[in-house]
Length: 318
Image 1 (cartoon, helix red, strand yellow):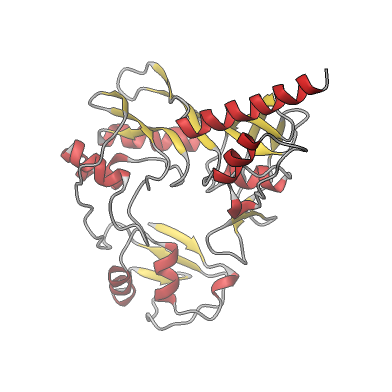
Image 2 (cartoon, helix red, strand yellow):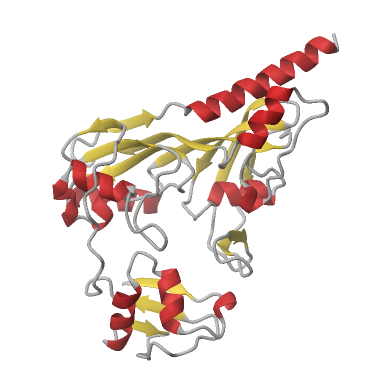
């Protein structure tokens, strides 16, 4: 059973249209059929596709019976850091969507995994147990068996799976911080999340790695796994990620920047966020395993240019 709460921004909309947004891994046709058959309910009650929601209702979808569009195997290059019968560790590039959904019906990581290992078709989303945003790069684990899938889901729930990210933010952080503001869907922007008093618990630990003139490289460790968690927490604190225009990045520059830095900042078209390390217990051997994905070239270049700008500025003021 999958449940989603209807936000106030959907007040007055048909329930079938709202369901297509909230349950975007299913086709509109399948969701309409689920409503007609009583497998998608509003606050536990059977309704019609034309029913108009008020906001605040809970939609419940019986995933055991709802029909999904089968995901198709597609040969897409994968960078595999490790693989055995139980586990795959993937270095996902920026620009690759993790699983099919509204606007991205195919050419996703799930499609690539099904081509690489067809037997993953028996697992939900081809064994994917956590996700990265399309424009976030880095390390992910994929379950290779039903046992591994249930083990990893439990590890995410009890927070024994550790995930560490690196990001470059606008602004100069003096020190690390613990961000614990609850989060939920932004009531004014459907594709965004926001800090909300009535949101779900969220916890991000941040520490400073390197400071530049108007930017900071940070490490962010996730203790919960809310959508856009790092991006929202840092933006709420006044430090949006470079390139993250969705959450307020403005292309900030230091006073009298080098031309290289101006070009680098203006040309960085994604959020400067990379899933660097993941640590987990192997579901079969019970060994503690840890894997890291190297920084992608665009993030390396950004870091190098920020460092060069700082060094040139310091030399001019010696």
